[in-house]
Length: 370
Image (cartoon, rainbow, N blue to C red; front, side, top):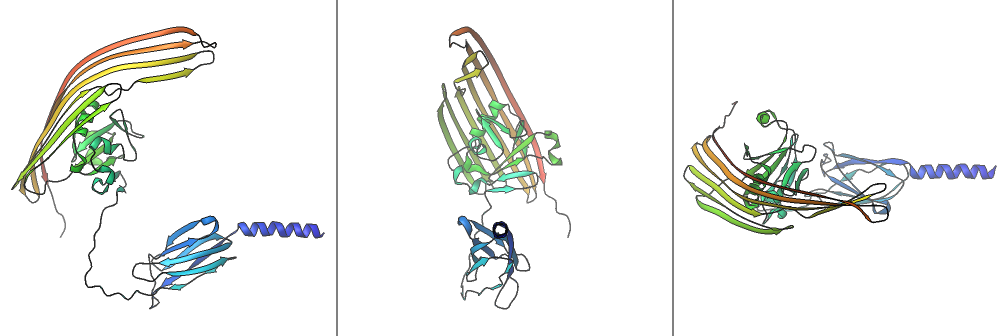
């Protein structure tokens, strides 16, 4: 009988130790007025830390297991208040915070946008606030944005695959190779933000249902010339050299912008893979000499007819000289690790292409209401 009673007590003790109880209360100021947005920090079991904030009525609530906890209440311009509490049931802690008696002669407020903003239809990467954006280009920046994939200089969106790229809300109609070269020519110093639009709104219907990436460049705010030059040398299986420059000029109501870039070389890496079957192993070696010469350039002019009206002309052009030689060698091994057979595949291609696009646009800002 005693063993049975002891067994029941042990069970209920174990259940009670796992039960969760409510820790709640209200935070007020010296005049007993509710204080919203007070940070409540709880430190407790196994170095666990929990945070919450008081609501508009100054109340807060936690669900906690039995044990000892440290509770800290903090708010700007108020003294911190600490409490030690042992939770064995529902507990209420009401706190009154004391205002810090400081007299300020001058207040300066500086604010920055968050690095990544999540909106209903897009993710906004504020390049100006990113340390990782220093000394890079647009293509490298895209690889650092959640949801964007850059593989072998090809840009795609996770879950979308196809992607269209815009500059200042204007579509850039380039092939994948031309686009990567163009993006490498844009210095991160000239980019204000990058918008990844996964659910394009109605105004982008002309671009189809693909994902969109809108690169918003910084506006030229000072008169005179501004420009930058960049160059890079990379190596996969072969060397690739690229260089680019952009120049901007503003005078009174006229703004000129341009950038030019040139790339020559092969970016395709050496590939080797093994495929295992029940009775065979295939060893595949892909040696691809993929050589491109890609010059391209863009030039645009804006005329600020009025504070709300902008007239503009934009031209984008370039060419691609492509030469590819591919050799795929496949060795088929049997179970005894001996060569059973060998497959050899050779291919080559030459492509010369060029593109030109131009658009004339009028931007008019309207204001409705009183």
